[in-house]
Length: 303
Image 1: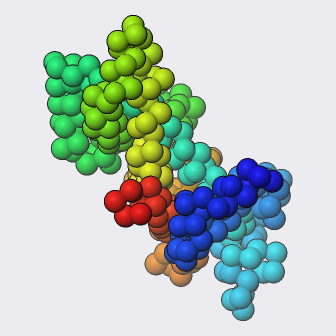
Image 2: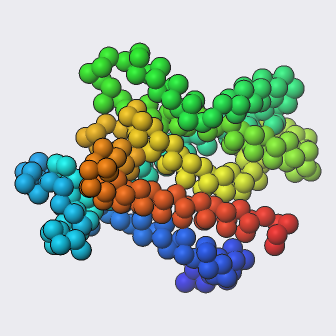
Image 3: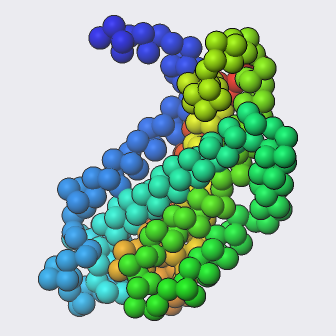
């Protein structure tokens, strides 16, 4: 209880309680996360269970429509699958890809940023020039290039089985330069401070100094960047899936649902694409607002 009370009385918690936008964004994000990762228990139907799908229920409108069915709250898609259940499962897939790509990008960016900032010299120049070249291209183009090369190099019958790793790797490799530049700048400041110089004097190795002393002091900006990057990764995944180079149709994400529903938009079945779009907007907006609040709360110049 003391730990909880101490956290509640901290400056970060105080800042959160006094920011209505941060509170709303946190609650919205929490509800979306619970719905996504609790989909197997919260979804009224299993959209991947073929025995529970009835083609006669295809393209039913939402329940408030005169032609709606109370069994399907937000209507059904062209295959008779419950759209509300599809949203929960699709959000879970989008979040899993987003989290995995952010973690991989963090790992690559932190390692290269620490090496560049601590070593300096030619090593720093090579790593940063590579990052600058990659930053000159939009992230979506980098992801499309990596995904295209992987698909060309792998036999067609294996494409679905490697779709998730390829997509995660493509998004991560498109996002590591931001982490590398952030960590490099913080590491260049930290390595000239007294505690790092003292570690060198007593014979601590450079690797141990980076891991034990420099890394813990550069994680603050990285965590803020990761929160914002999660929203970017979700958007990138949705864009790739909308373009048809993302996850396979058997495991649809929000982007895949929007792409499939777009084929029925002008024939009157608007709910198939509108509701996934609304879910994507809520998810990305709430995560972005949390990242903005966290950045301001951890900025000592604004405290």
